[in-house]
Image (tube, rainbow, N blue to C red; front, side, top):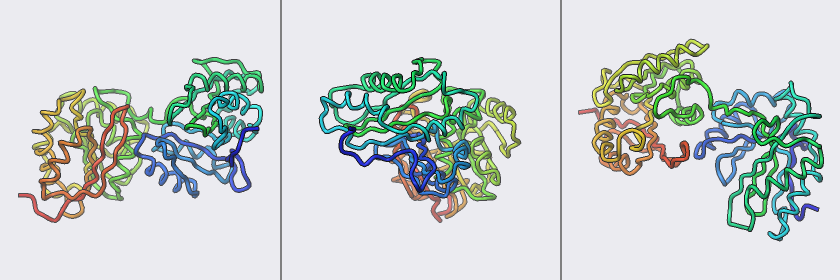
Length: 376
């Protein structure tokens, strides 16, 4: 037996299946809102971060997950096993028996919908484990080994760690486990950009930032430090009834952004210029939304230069923003420098601060609202 548990399976009487989406850590609520709007169900996100559960009522809705812009990977839940074992010493033994004791039919049916050209009889597979929580005497490779052995015994599939057809994913948080099957091999964040600069944000992170800005139809959205244009391109695709301006001081940024726009299949409303964020060629009070990735002071610049740049940039963004209407969403890993600037300014009020993970770096998102104070 699996031990004491109230397991959640892929299928129950209310839902056809439960999908799970991996998202950039810190943007779980954004992804949950997008999932709820698309599927009309109540999604939940995990305390450990980076994952959102999506109940799917109808079989014909399963492929809708491909439309999600906030998620990196989609997985289908086979089974959740809370408190699968009360004895840490026997945990690996119990985990190794789980594949043979659970039902796989519905989750494999969903996998087949995403991989119609593959035959289950002769697929190759691998097991990947993500373990968190206190050290209980075994690691992720140990879990992958015993669960992989159990899967091999049940189905006879061959193991291939690199060119696999199907991936079984195991999340272990202390003595609770979840088993899932991955549905997309390549992350959904791989889109929009074909010409890369030194720092390029994932499209899924860009969507999260733009969502926090509450973009509305007719809004003019500005990214004054656009790099390769990832924020403006994602914004124009996801909010087609808005207009986007992008620019950067680097001489290669504007042509690189323009090349990325031209490489798209869709025609989007983005104009690109070269400019200095401290002296924008934009009239006062005409921008509805600013969304930008400020220099972290790592690959570009340094924290000392941020102390000079940030006050000037924050003031110039305030100048071009509409009084009481303008919103700004600013991403930085140098939160101390930006917090210092915002504590002194009279032009912006802080609405929300969110800690996020960007490419393994801890960063902070500041969501701001323009005050009614005219720029002087």
